Amino acid sequence: MKRGKLVVVTGSEGLLGKEMVLDLTKKGFHVIRADKSLEDAGDCYYLDITDQESVQSMLMKLLAKHDYIDGWVNNAYPRTKDWGKDWKDIEFTSWQKNIDMHLNGYFLCMHKVSDIMTKQGFGSIVNLSSIYGVVGPDFSVYENTEMTMPAAYSAIKGAIINLTRFLAARLGPDGVRVNCVSPGGIIDAQPKAFLDAYCKKVPMRRMGTPVDIAPAISFLISDESQYITGQNIIIDGGWTAI
Ligand SMILES: NC(=O)c1ccc[n+]([C@@H]2O[C@H](COP(=O)([O-])OP(=O)(O)OC[C@H]3O[C@@H](n4cnc5c(N)ncnc54)[C@H](O)[C@@H]3O)[C@@H](O)[C@H]2O)c1
Image 1 (cartoon, rainbow, N blue to C red):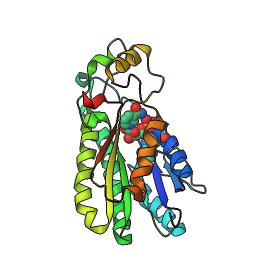
Image 2 (cartoon, rainbow, N blue to C red):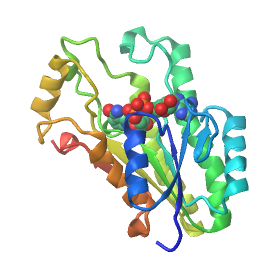
Image 3 (spheres, protein in one colour):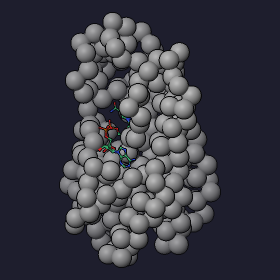
C-alpha cells in the first residue's frame, strides 16, 4: 500500500462495525468511523444515513481534510422501535419507514460517494447484506423464543444485493467496485432455544462472530480484490449451502 487508504465505516460503533474498524486499522487502512451515535472529533463523524443533509455535510467535512475516499462500508443498521414484529402484525407505515431508512439510506450513501469515487477514478464500496437477502428465513429456529425475522429485512437485504450488481455494472467503467458481504447469524446474547436450534442446523455448528466477518470487508476494500465487483460473499458457516 503506497499511502494509507481512507475507508469510511458507517455504523462503526455497532457489533460488526467495531471489529471492521479494528481489522481495517490493523491492515494499515486509515479508518473513518461514521455513526449516528458519534460526534465529530478527529476520525469520528456524526452521520445519519437516512438524512441527505447529514450525508452531504459529513462528506464535505471529510473532503476538506482528505484528498480521496478509497473505500466506503455501508454497514449502519437503522430500524424502527417496533422492528422484529411478526408478519401478520406489521403496520404498513412501519414497513415503509424501515425500507426508507435502511435500503434508501444505503442508496443515498452510494449515490453521493460514487460521485466522488467516479471523479477520482477509483474506489471500493462494500454493502452489508445478510443470508436473509439470499434465502428465506427458517422460522423453526425462532420457536420457543420471542424472536422472529422481520419481512422488511428480507426485502431490504435482497434489494441491496441486486443494487450492488446494478452499481457494479454502472460504475465498473469508472474504476469503482461495488460488492456485498452477507453474514449469517452473529452471536449476541440470543436465547438458548434459538442458539441450540441455529447451531443444530448450520453445518459448522456455531454462530458467526464479528471476527469471522471483518476480514472479508478489508479484503474487498483492498487492492487484493481489484478484479472483483458485483459479488456477494456469504459468510455463514454453510447455512445457505444446504
Ligand atoms: N448482527 C447480525 O447477526 C447480522 C447478520 C447479518 C447481517 N448483519 C448486518 O450487518 C450490519 C451491522 O449489523 P450490527 O449487528 O453490527 O448492527 P448494530 O445494531 O450492532 O450496529 C448498528 C450501528 O448502526 C448505527 N446506526 C443506526 N442507524 C443509523 C443511521 N441512521 N445512520 C448512521 N448510523 C446508524 C448504530 O448507532 C450502530 O452503531 C447491518 O447492515 C446488519 O443488517 C448483521
